[in-house]
Image 1 (cartoon, rainbow, N blue to C red):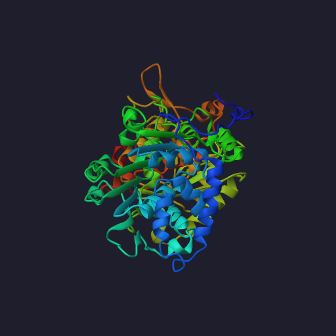
Image 2: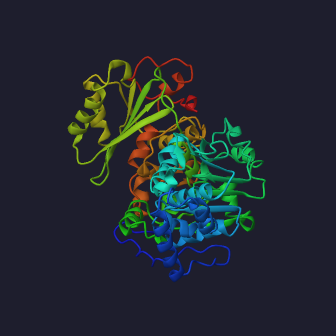
Image 3: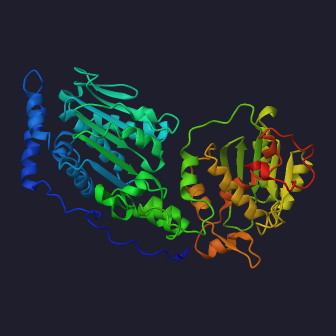
Length: 515
């Protein structure tokens, strides 16, 4: 267990993470220096001065992606990035990289794509990710950044479009294409045929299996290479299998934040203190490990990650419901979750506010909205200090309803209290795979942290905030607020049933319409 006051010392960085295959030969330093000078001299010449420039470029760098990065892009790759690039040039056709956050995997993949694109013909490179934001805001944006770093003599050969990078002389025969991976349209990765094919799948844990199956035909050629990269967010699927039962068929890399010079000690220490080293969030975001298969974890990491990265907006006609978790202790934060239909649009937090100040903050949020957008219910955890906030919100005419999470649940034979029922309802809601929550690392960790156990009578109970703090974990304030905004009679209305007439009475015990 990790103490919140004395985190474990960070282990010493290693030169590079271990791989499953023998170490590949790296470029000789003196030779690399000579090559860099030759390349610099070459790049300083214009294409008019050097008619055979491209042929010379191909001869020099076709089988040397590390040299291409050092000499042409003028950057020094990290040790693991060198091994990754050398694995491609050595002929490994299936490569899978799992890593922590911020280790430079998108950068390394961009270098690989650009090198492959410029040194082969005909060539088709396809880069994909589960959502358009992951694809275009992250990976494709990084790729375009490195195109801009090319020397002019190379940059003038290519044209950059919104979703493609093409060789001007042969745009249909040599290109890099960005395509999202959706379960609804797996055919997007079909029909990619060329003498040279490279498929790069970013955030591969989140890509549906149907997409990989559709792409398999395109990747059957002798010169087709597949690169999978991402944070390891789920214990199922092809990405997980490449590091486990299919490990012998794939060249694999594991890059921890602890081994990366790009990740600061401060980031690692913050993650240790906030989430604890035994938490799923720490395993995934820092260590680059697949989440531990803990049978006692309420909400799997994969459901959280999918909901955060899903692209959807709330319907204009969807009803708004807010959940307010009132801080009980000085270090805790009061949290307000705002849900509209199937989308939790925002979770706000406040620290250090007294009850009247917190009430004022909630009223200000409510009155800032036009009447048509104001929530029809504000669900307030009425235990302890929350009762005072609830009473004042009602006095001011807001549609507030008290939720005592210690009370009996609707399903009395299954759950120990209403809090346990709401957490498992939240799990079921996320499992619908048609919902969205804010992309928030704190929320991610809070949702993934609580464990459950069974009472002596066989009922399920969710770990208390006090118990989590003893494990060195923060209070799940945002997560509890999210659960509260699902504890509503309005949930049934969202599925075509009638609204309850009054917000003054106790919460109706039948909340099964929620899922």
